[in-house]
Image (tube, rainbow, N blue to C red; front, side, top):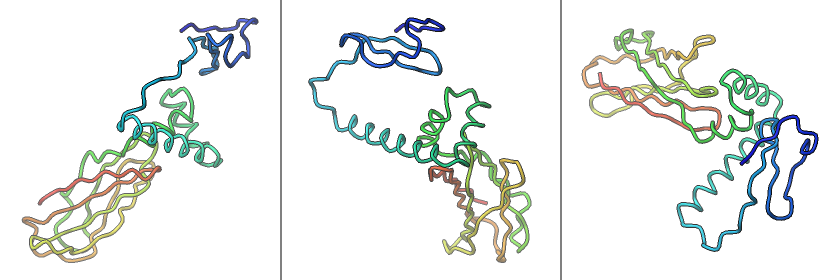
Length: 189
């Protein structure tokens, strides 16, 4: 594969040349490559699944880049994180779930009004974080949405119900990103 910059001969050139070479515009550069050949073998089941996933990721990216607000977000993040384009970032975002790195329970005493702090991040943005409190007997005491601290990766959940026995209580935390990928974390007190 060769690249061409500022070459008047290849400027703006795209497509196939003589069935042998392909010219593509990649990140403002003209890339020259050998033309792809049609494969004789049928794709494996795993290849079909991966192709379908990529097709869905491409459809997601097209939809996001057609929305002015989403386009502005993906453009800003792509420039900041040095992606080739907002489209590349949107496709990558479709494939990657957010990450819950910390569930801080130091402020949670089991009393209503105490807080559970969740640190969740994503390549682009975390859209929501939910917390469910389950007692030792396996009964859900409460469930609700956490609130994001302004311009931060920290989310706060304020308890609304009393939990008399903390030992053995399970906290089920779920973070969801823009393409609806989800990450879960369970913490046992």
